[in-house]
Image (cartoon, rainbow, N blue to C red; front, side, top):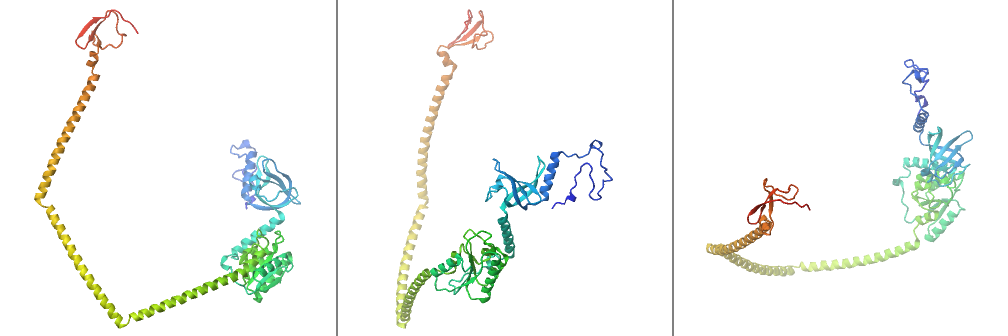
Length: 480
């Protein structure tokens, strides 16, 4: 928390917090004009610095009060005052925050808000920026719920390591609930339908009000001391947060945690959640759900027993057949181990080995014959006469291929020369002159004339024809 005695603002008339008097080294000037280094605050800067100091000095905090002057403009932001008997403060709750509201605030509502302290700079007004709002009664209970939840969770009361498993078929069931409520009737009805043979012990308590907490704790302690049930159901019907609050008390939670018997919590409806649900070994969505969890369905159980009986009978039959088969195999092995049977087997084995030896020798001789033939063939292929004959044949083939290649290359070169000569003749100036054209030059400079711009009457020109040339004089020039 920011301490105001540590805030040092350099303004006219500044005093030292250590001595409570003006600094002797820097005495305050009488006016801003006397000191060019004086730090003069504008109103905007003052409000801005004050806002920063307030926002940094106060954490996000909870404030309780009554709503007044409530306004909800078209922007979606909420503006109101929060007051008590002696004071009030302006509040603003912006649209992004008020979307999470579960009720519509009105003037006169007692609420609990989570807010940041700030200043509205344009007017310099002190206000709260609300991040969360709850109805006062339920909001306080929810805060107490969260605080106790965090405390017990830190101590490990919710850890799965401490959860006990439920017995498959309990010998006796205990119920801690109101003896006159609808919850106990629903539980007994479900137990009678699913497993009527199991006895039930009811530990009557109140399940609402200030005295309910002590009675519930006493009933759970009785269950622990008597050790007469295999599983315990702690249940009540639905209700508001205030109605269910006795199951959010720390004493009830610690009694459930200390109970040596597995505890099933069936408090409220499916949407309700209590500290007892977190500490219990198992949570049921409703009291009826708790009854369905603690006992199996007798019809299904009998069906499973019958199925297991059939499986056991089939397994015993299979084992008997296996034993008979093993006995037959052992008796046959015993017969085979007699001396006469062994001699016969060895004689049969010798005959088999003789046949294998004969087949092996025949196969080896055939393999060696084929290998010799392959060696002879390879020697013939490596003979010098055969290689010379092969090389002569290959030389003749190469000479024939060379002659054919030279003929094709000479024909291709002649064709390209003829085509090039034709193309050269087509672009030759002499061919152009053969078609009746002439090259006209200035008779004095020899420059080729392409236009009449540089000529006048009386100039002499020289014309180059396809065969010979001539010199002429210009009599008349006609412009195109």
